[in-house]
Length: 91
Image (tube, rainbow, N blue to C red):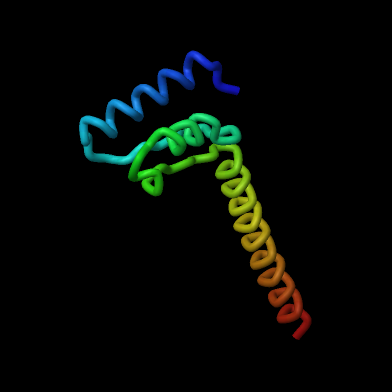
């Protein structure tokens, strides 16, 4: 969890950017429960819809699941090819 001092710094930075009209978007990477972004949402007058959360744990799990599906697909295709070749050898 983010300390009170760090949350205060995030809120101050968001207020400064908002008041100065600095263009761009806020992003929190490596999110764990999104505490810092919640503090920014409560601070910003406008533009809270441009905040982005990037949960590295969730995306890592999604990537691992995709890689596993790809490996299973490759293995299934290989087994199917071997089986059809075995049937052809019978004739």
